[in-house]
Length: 174
Image (cartoon, rainbow, N blue to C red; front, side, top):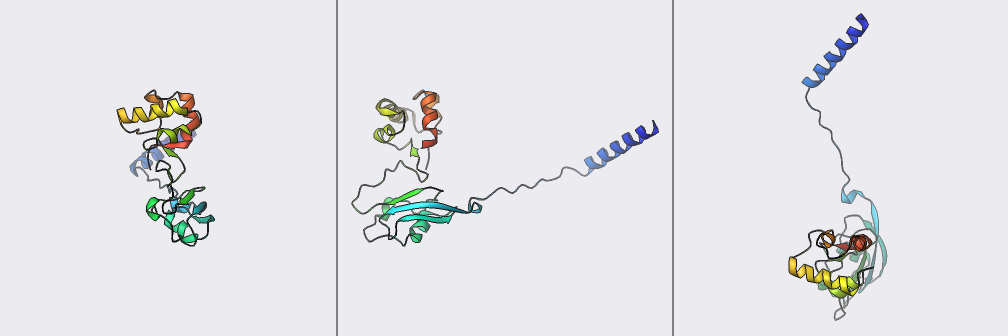
């Protein structure tokens, strides 16, 4: 019985002492975009040496262009965002002057932006077709930009099953 009383007293003393010291800060280090190591990006079009290049996570299109030996004289650099950060497995197409530019609705990650895509661009998505692509554009024009891609279902523009098929292929921002 005396042993039990001693254990209880020790527990109460430890609890009281621990509470007096106050809360302890816990430090958690989250990985930085630049801590992810090398990634691979494919660059083609009006570049000196098209191909797949290993660059660092967090690098920009301009960095990949430099790795590819720079642009050719007929490159239309105004048609692409040189400051855009690249992601693993991105494809960068540097258009030539006078060439049809890549659609503005395709982001650096290769997703279609449902806030800027035309009906014909949306039509290329699996399961969308002509009817749903028109509904996406008409709803966007009538009710404003989509804040999240989930709004396609919330606004009853497309059914949930169709959304699930395309959600990894679309975005609402740059």
